[in-house]
Image 1 (cartoon, rainbow over the protein chains, first blue to last red):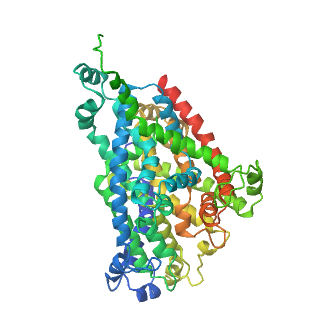
Image 2: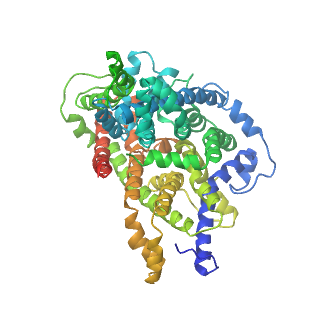
Image 3: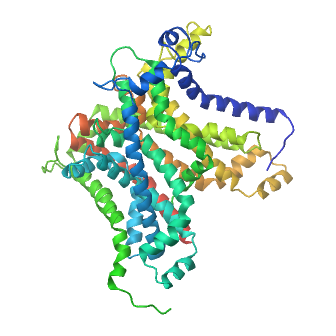
Length: 287
Length: 294
């Protein structure tokens, strides 16, 4: 590597580039935060990059419990709890099924399973628009449209490829002798899974959970189609607050609501750090 | 190895365990695609109809001004988005790889937008770019009195604002993957290049970039699928406007499925979107599986 540490025009250029890029990436976060603490008068008078002169928490209060979506003015807290209610089962169930799939594919290799897996991998890339109308019809036959189980089922369907892939690749690196030994000891399918495989799957479970919570929380289109006003996730509510309200736009409330909606994935990102990147790498590099 | 004869039902357990996956593949993936394909050959409006009309919906689709505009927008968007993400992501990765101080902080800063939803991304950039309030007003405050920056309400420029917002969101991901690729390259190359007196930029362009081929292929595939999916960011940022100036195919399909009750036309659009994706994915997965076997 060209690892020079002395100061040269090239080094200064490198830092200048990186720092200006960093400022560009940070700009929207700064603008969001600054705007959310300003009063509307200050927003009208001042400029978007200025720090708030009189800090106010009112926009945050308004966003959480007062902003109007459609007819009700109860803020986006309802959406927050809906998103929690959707994200928890939509994380636990896909991980469990993905782990079982990966385990069966890696060790038991039932006939035809690899064909199914191949189709599933191609399926991961199918645009949602191709599948969405038939899915609505299918869910409608079972009366699941707009219900929590319906949304969770749809999230499960769309999460199945990547969850299966993550666990299949993880179990592929587990020594086969371990599995053989467990079989000779008389372990059946689920016993080996529960007592041998699952306990050593913690790292990949963490990666999968990070990916899935973030993905489900940030989903918009599935929430838009499969939820009703009682179950809609925070992203859908956020968009309604900002883009369908009539009258003067409350930019400060809007930005507070945007930050509130982004808080969970951002917190996961900042706390999990390298795990988040690992998830991206594991999920992105297919096969 | 000597096998103890087991209960015949035990052999069925792995099959039973894969039943959810089998159902998902057959019903939710294959079934829905075939259903959509079938609908696209009918004259369905609000509900599926069985009247077969052949390719009529496809003809109608490609005579539809809004669809053609959507495709046009997506082409411009796709080329710019992919090019910008690749260039910015690669440059950031190369510059970070120069043994800089604060690497961890920089990586965190470049990647955090990726943790945000496209909805939030679209809304933030909508606010930043609002004429009379955002950057425009700030520039006027700083003394540039005649400064105008109204791309987001300009029919000819609005699609570029979507590019800016989504590149901001996604180029960190490219950076992270490129950086992982760079770190996987054998350090001996650098020693050899230095001995031969080859300038570092030449090494990057002529040696490192070709070696990053597989990484770039993966990134390209991810970015292409993101382009085809483009929906949330447009809805949040411009709602397809002003007018229909920032319409994209995914939004056209959603509007015709749910708002305008023209299911058959929307399904034809969806099938058209599927073709480039399959054309990209099939060779990619094939190459991967070949490599895995070798």
